[in-house]
Image (cartoon, rainbow, N blue to C red; front, side):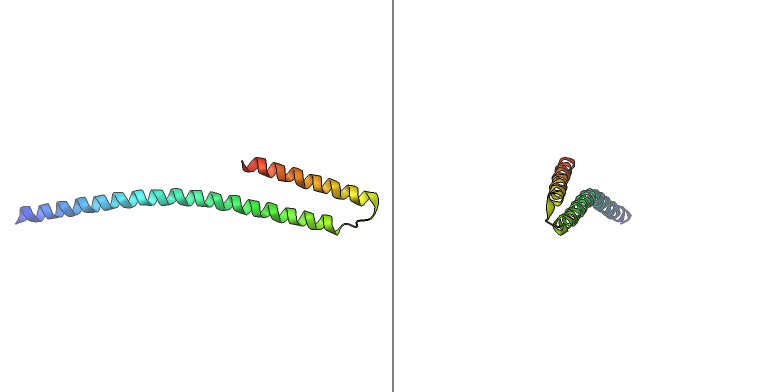
Length: 94
Protein backbone atom coordinates (compact mmCIF):
# COMPACT_ATOMS: atom_id res chain seq x y z
CA UNK A 1 0.00 0.00 0.00
CA UNK A 2 2.72 2.44 0.96
CA UNK A 3 4.78 1.42 -2.09
CA UNK A 4 1.83 2.05 -4.42
CA UNK A 5 1.21 5.46 -2.89
CA UNK A 6 4.90 6.33 -3.29
CA UNK A 7 4.86 5.26 -6.95
CA UNK A 8 1.71 7.30 -7.56
CA UNK A 9 3.34 10.37 -6.02
CA UNK A 10 6.49 9.84 -8.07
CA UNK A 11 4.39 9.64 -11.22
CA UNK A 12 2.58 12.84 -10.31
CA UNK A 13 5.90 14.52 -9.56
CA UNK A 14 7.24 13.56 -12.98
CA UNK A 15 4.10 14.89 -14.66
CA UNK A 16 4.39 18.17 -12.74
CA UNK A 17 8.08 18.49 -13.63
CA UNK A 18 7.32 17.88 -17.31
CA UNK A 19 4.52 20.46 -17.21
CA UNK A 20 6.77 23.02 -15.49
CA UNK A 21 9.47 22.47 -18.09
CA UNK A 22 6.95 22.89 -20.92
CA UNK A 23 5.60 26.08 -19.35
CA UNK A 24 9.13 27.46 -19.00
CA UNK A 25 9.78 26.78 -22.69
CA UNK A 26 6.49 28.42 -23.63
CA UNK A 27 7.33 31.41 -21.44
CA UNK A 28 10.74 31.79 -23.07
CA UNK A 29 9.20 31.63 -26.57
CA UNK A 30 6.59 34.22 -25.63
CA UNK A 31 9.26 36.54 -24.23
CA UNK A 32 11.20 36.29 -27.50
CA UNK A 33 8.05 37.00 -29.50
CA UNK A 34 7.25 39.99 -27.29
CA UNK A 35 10.76 41.36 -27.81
CA UNK A 36 10.43 41.06 -31.59
CA UNK A 37 6.97 42.65 -31.59
CA UNK A 38 8.12 45.55 -29.42
CA UNK A 39 11.03 46.24 -31.77
CA UNK A 40 8.68 46.12 -34.73
CA UNK A 41 6.30 48.52 -33.01
CA UNK A 42 9.13 50.95 -32.26
CA UNK A 43 10.21 50.88 -35.90
CA UNK A 44 6.66 51.49 -37.09
CA UNK A 45 6.22 54.36 -34.63
CA UNK A 46 9.45 55.94 -35.90
CA UNK A 47 8.27 55.58 -39.49
CA UNK A 48 4.97 57.18 -38.55
CA UNK A 49 6.79 60.13 -36.99
CA UNK A 50 8.92 60.45 -40.12
CA UNK A 51 5.82 60.49 -42.30
CA UNK A 52 4.19 63.09 -40.06
CA UNK A 53 7.26 65.28 -40.42
CA UNK A 54 7.20 64.84 -44.18
CA UNK A 55 3.55 65.89 -44.26
CA UNK A 56 4.34 68.99 -42.18
CA UNK A 57 7.15 69.91 -44.54
CA UNK A 58 4.98 69.30 -47.58
CA UNK A 59 2.25 71.52 -46.12
CA UNK A 60 4.82 74.20 -45.42
CA UNK A 61 6.08 74.02 -48.99
CA UNK A 62 2.53 74.14 -50.34
CA UNK A 63 1.72 77.21 -48.28
CA UNK A 64 4.59 79.21 -49.75
CA UNK A 65 3.51 81.77 -52.32
CA UNK A 66 4.08 80.59 -55.86
CA UNK A 67 5.26 83.98 -57.06
CA UNK A 68 8.78 84.97 -57.85
CA UNK A 69 11.92 83.02 -58.50
CA UNK A 70 12.92 83.08 -54.83
CA UNK A 71 9.90 81.08 -53.72
CA UNK A 72 10.33 78.60 -56.58
CA UNK A 73 13.98 78.19 -55.65
CA UNK A 74 13.04 77.76 -51.99
CA UNK A 75 10.46 75.12 -52.90
CA UNK A 76 13.02 73.26 -54.96
CA UNK A 77 15.54 73.33 -52.10
CA UNK A 78 12.96 72.08 -49.62
CA UNK A 79 11.88 69.31 -51.99
CA UNK A 80 15.52 68.31 -52.41
CA UNK A 81 15.92 68.22 -48.62
CA UNK A 82 12.84 66.02 -48.35
CA UNK A 83 14.25 63.62 -50.94
CA UNK A 84 17.58 63.53 -49.15
CA UNK A 85 15.86 62.86 -45.81
CA UNK A 86 13.86 60.05 -47.43
CA UNK A 87 17.07 58.51 -48.73
CA UNK A 88 18.67 58.71 -45.30
CA UNK A 89 15.63 57.14 -43.66
CA UNK A 90 15.64 54.34 -46.23
CA UNK A 91 19.35 53.76 -45.64
CA UNK A 92 18.93 53.68 -41.86
CA UNK A 93 15.96 51.30 -42.15
CA UNK A 94 18.05 48.66 -43.90
